[in-house]
Amino acid sequence: MADSQEALIADDDPVTLQLIAHFLRTRGFQVWTAGTGERLWELWRTTRSRIVLSDIEMPGVQDGILACRAIQRADPSVRIFLMTARPENRLRAAADGFQVALVKPFSLDELRLWADNLHCFTPQT
Image (cartoon, rainbow, N blue to C red):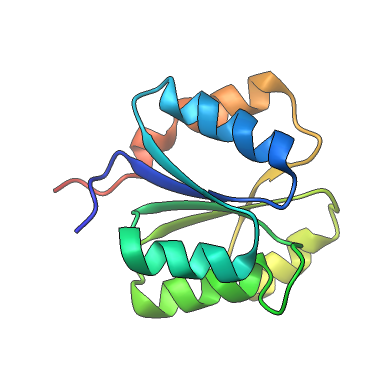
């Protein structure tokens, strides 16, 4: 079982991916990164990370929502957060029972607020 201070981040934009990963690492998280929905699902099956932050729209057969659906089916206790560059994707996320945590482009203050509040969402073991 993964430690509660582990996070899996997925985004097809390498700059956004590295920014978020760096932010979480500076807060003590072990972070894995994926650039596609397929890789997100593959990494999650290996890491069993308790926190997932995924972009909604990514290239490939399996986008962020499809990958997160699979993760949620496998383990409903995983805390899943989504991000998007298209605000209208909030409705698609909500229809699947997910919440959009970040709308791109987001400010460093928004990222800091989300990252600093992750302890509220991590399950206690």
